[in-house]
Length: 442
Image (cartoon, rainbow, N blue to C red; front, side, top):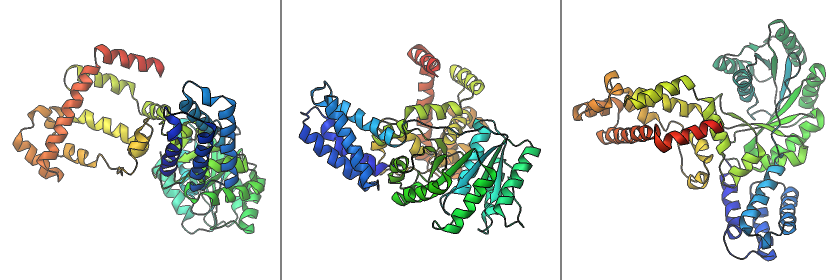
């Protein structure tokens, strides 16, 4: 996500980050490089120019040239301006109404149907809501079936009227159905087109007028850059939507849409899609995204994801096992499953300060744990409980069963033993004090 932009901004700010003398001249030169980086990320020229002008004015106004650490102050100004450019602060959903009605809009192929499912899942798990998905796309042949598959995946009911070609009627009937069946959020997936056209706009405007939703969200593919911003403006002129959803940010997104859309339509980005799984959705925090773009990581989001998967009872059981030297591969598998639930591995690594730059160009498969899991599943229950019994003949059998080599089995056993020792150390002394400190912070 934004790898190219991050790299170019880092290069542009490199001189100012150092301990060399900072002057008005090299501040101006740096701003030119920053502007080039933004333009290369497909940010509108006018927005890029306004951005760099504001940064330069603030830098000179805050006496950056005479500051004790001028480079750091300059980077902070750029970071704050990036956050402001993307909206300043996060904005949640308006969940008033009984039921709350959310209308999804956007072009075909933007990920609207998939994100409708992700949003339903997010509301169900985070806000303990009872959502209803509504199939109001009456044109695309597979649209209803696709939404039903999504609904089955997340355990959310899908309302559809296969014979009805009137999306306004379907939406109204779905809201009535929701009231009768105690569904407190209705998410309406509407038809998209390959391009903005009058027929499409009239239809979505008619649905909007008939149901008066609490939230109208515009879903846009982040990889389409400046075109996405132009499309957003066309939709906003007709619908006056409440917020933007950016999908496919796990792909080769240059960042133009995320950086430009707020300035053009003056509406917040509310959520981002970060992967293909139904759980790959995040609330959009402009300040955290600015940190990540500048290579500062996003520790807050990383901790939040970890806390979501944290089970206090399981943690207590694990602590007891570690204290008694009973930590085995079954416990290790549980830890792997928790990490996998946190999201895309490369995305998680990018949240660690400094790791984004280090991971540039490194391809981490989402199935990075597959080899480890295969080796563990090839062990007997007794071997998983007590790894110390695994001798050379057992290693050969495990390697054959998992399609790996004895060397790979040895490597996993070595890493496992090192981790078990480290976890044992963390149980007492400094480790215990550190863990208590983290508990106090959470």
